[in-house]
Length: 144
Ligand code: HEM
Picture (cartoon, rainbow, N blue to C red):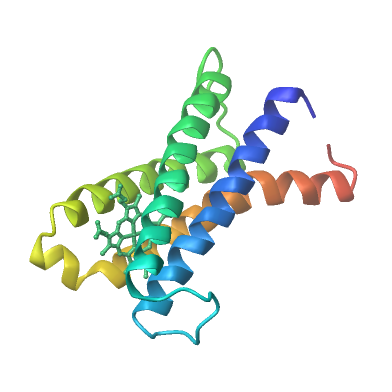
C-alpha cells in the first residue's frame, strides 16, 4: 500500500468514527437510543455539530484525494471503484445538503432530520466499506 492510500484510509477512519459519533449524539439527544455519553441537551448538539463538521471536512478532503488518484489521469472502472465512487458522490450530496438545510432550520428538513442523518451514515459506511474495510480484508487474504 502506498503512503497516499494510507493517508486516505486514515482520514476515512477518522471520518467514519466522527460519523458514528454524530449519529449517536443526535439519537441520544432525541432519546432514540439509551444514553452512551455523559452529556446532556445542548452539549450533545454541540458535539454533534463538531463531529459532523469533522466528517464533512474529512469527506471533502478524502474525496479530492480520491479524485486526483482515481479519476485523473486514469479513471478506474472496476466494480469496486464504481461502487466506491457512487457511494462517495451520493454521500457528498447528502451530507452537504443536510448541513446546509439544517443550518437554515427549514421546517420540512428538520422533520426529516433523523431519516436524512441515517441515510448519510449508511452512505458513509458504504464509502468506508468499499475502501478501507476492503483494503484491510484484501491484505488479510493476500490480494494487496
Ligand atoms: C439521526 C441522525 C442525525 C440527525 C437527526 C441530525 C440532525 C442535525 C441537526 C438538527 C443539525 C443542525 C444543528 C444546529 O445547527 O442546531 C445538524 C447539523 C449537522 N449535522 Fe447532523 N444529524 C444526524 C446525523 C448526522 C451525521 C451522521 C453526520 C455526518 C456524518 C451529520 C453531520 C452534520 C453536519 C456537518 C451539520 C452542520 C454543522 C454546522 O452547523 O456547522 N449529521 N444535524
